[in-house]
Length: 509
Image 1 (cartoon, rainbow, N blue to C red):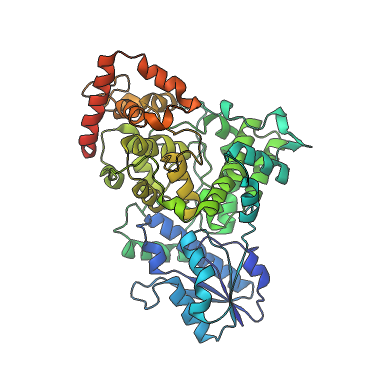
Image 2: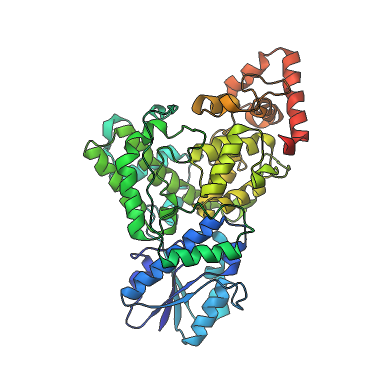
């Protein structure tokens, strides 16, 4: 008898290890363990989503005839780690082998692949996670011999591989990428659809009660929990997005608006990342909507690019470069994460809204993460490790393989440009252009050196100047340095002085 271990991000009935196992003689093991729930202070909604989705998935497996051993969370349990739960189950049933699918975190995968077999005393078989379009080996082969790994070229190969939005060997519409069409500011029109809502069953209620009792000290609000927790609900969320939001997703995917956490975004990433939805089926739903003339090409392409392009690309970067990638700090940042990342109390309107969205929904869309909270951390010189731990903790879709490259590489440029060719640093002008935050802010986005000037403005130039040696030779930043050089020397110094003051009073902003 073999034991099939299924993790919280593997809630897929077509999972590789499930295809190997036999329900007539093998057993399934699933476990909620303290070590995995608290190694960073995960948002209560993230924990509730995973626990509830796991319990629903276990119930579905039982209905299909599987023997499922489910270890529910117990803070007092002697089995506080995943290995200890596996050891207990293997001993109880005299298991001949452990069968699993490769997981999404180097820390755990390294232990499973290199230590578990010796520690358990039985074979541990780990199968390739073929829910992804590009395997680790395939990405490594693609990367071999390339001086730079650019997502755009990888994305084109994934389009060719899947056939999505392709006409033979040519891209649909003649262009590979319609990102230039996807930068409109949203000013209230078109109107936003009502969000989809899900009824809560006994499993949901029990999990929310558990999380409220055990994880109330973690940052985040559990009372606004709105996530799907079953595959059927996730499919309903997909259909709702395709019908009501995808038609406008392309135009407004970079827009931000106060008190509007969703706009036209899908909020499907938590379901894809935990396995309730498959990336290819989500892309195919968007493709069908385009083929049915329900959505424009820029919307379908922009959405599909996020999944088969960016999502697959950052996973490849992660497995190609771990574990050393996690410790990179090429900009030499040393500053601690400011207080308001934990309490949300700041006079910067854009930051305040992004924090409120994050704490209330365990979610913020990619521009809020990249160009607001991430941009501030970058230009303020925050330690990448602190920023990565925060992003991993507070977002429902954050798993190490996807969070780390996005945060350390794209947000913090701590890999020295390995993932992205230029740092995603910007002044307050970008935020003003793409949102309505600035109109009601304590700070003025139009000035740089006054006592109430937007902190992003002077911190941006301070960042550019203090890293001049690293960036001056970057052809994509030549115009930026020329702009600063054209300023009056007195203004230059005043901007840098304002930034120094802000950095020395960073917790007061």
